[in-house]
Image (tube, rainbow, N blue to C red; front, side, top):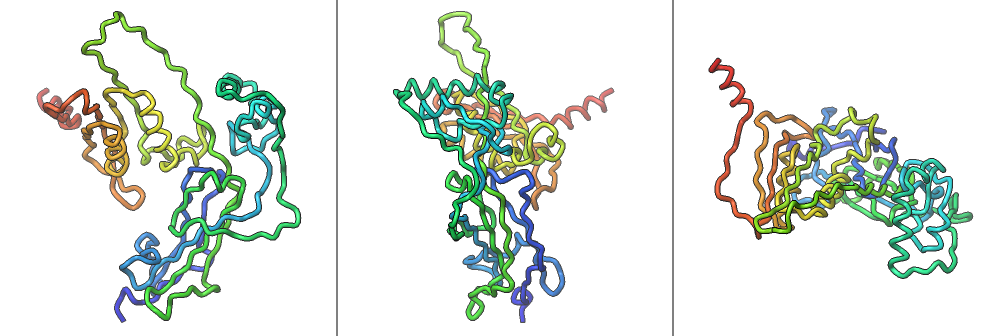
Length: 344
């Protein structure tokens, strides 16, 4: 029997899914399970997924959503907290229901400037204050029989808006690629459930200081934006005191970062702490779609993170309809510093 044909097994009770900070819409769930072959550990990432062309043994993953809603409403500002009050004006103005909840009077007061914008937006869209129906409900549906709907077949899953208010379930097992090992053994399937999925918080609106141009002449003028992205390899537990751990998840942050950067419509983007693999997989292709040309310089020393080597660097993006690259000049600060030291 070839080495890759030797049976793979899941270590009993090894399936873990970290949800201590809650489960949120848009934040990817990444389960962990321990796999062994002949009592030797095997990285789960090295086991092909079910249906892949390679691998004699494969990992079968299934994600399911419960058909019964759980719990009550959550705060629109702090979705990790239960809602304690609901804005009546929001209901009259037909504001999206999930935006009408707050966890406390203090929360409602401190975010009033943001909250009242919802009322004004709906009124400007022609919504009339002609009555309302409260959606503040708690608990689950009485007498309902719980069933599950399949929502995913990959190792990871990103909850969507359809999942909000419901519990998710993840099942994993080892299956053979060829018959007769095509069906999983129910006794060897490991299962874990999440808490109910909560809506992602709404990013706060930034109140930018608008600089008045010194003259009305616009010839030769251009806009430049500089932004530190906080590389994922640095977004670790050190930030736990300033923000919840789930909000640091790259799959959640990247969409919000891209949305904000494109909002400003800058002619030139100067970005710091751009992680090398994220530059190749996300930033370069996404900003090229938006009409930008990319230039990137990463640091020389790489760090092993998430089963690969990566490091951050600086990226410059400029609009191709306004500029063209004439020359690129890279500076190695370490070498420059050492050369100055040697010359002393």
